[in-house]
Picture 1: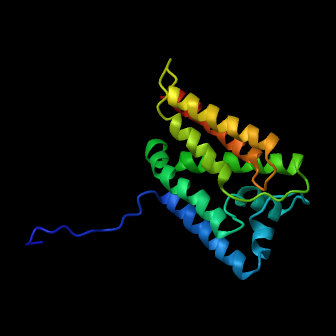
Picture 2: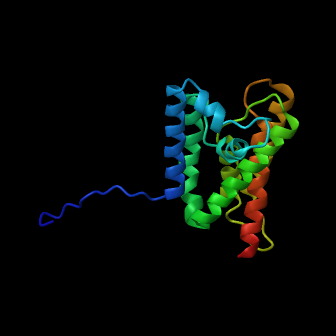
Picture 3: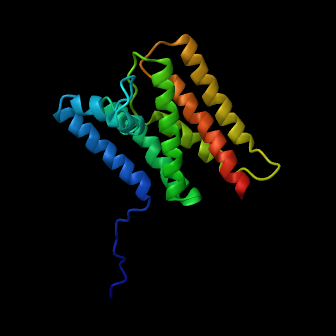
Length: 191
């Protein structure tokens, strides 16, 4: 431009993160429209006969949310951490990490909590929190910030499992956090 002003442009800077957040929002809206039936059928994991729907739920439960506030609380951190992780590890690695955490948390829920339906991205969010803190691992060095994040996070989740009865699945959070530590260690050991 002749007058020296820059033209602003929007950029789809983190495709995996942004697409996940958008699909989760669409799932939430469709859930409202269907009065929760679509969420129950596709986006909650619970013990049932093995079928194509069982496999869809095993992966898809991380896309479902019970309310707008549930969605917002997960997506705030998800959208903050996702672009950093996509930049550091790449799109494919992040999708693989999401799938691993979804399957592990889904199977744990099916096996140990047969009467509970699990949904939401909080396991992924906690995996991302630990994975970001583990992103600075170097050979022979462990960042103190990573140790503190893991201790504070896991300590509070264990405390909540024992002392607080609420609808949040602390075990899913712990699975996400432990998965983030393991995935971070494996990814950073390759470098």
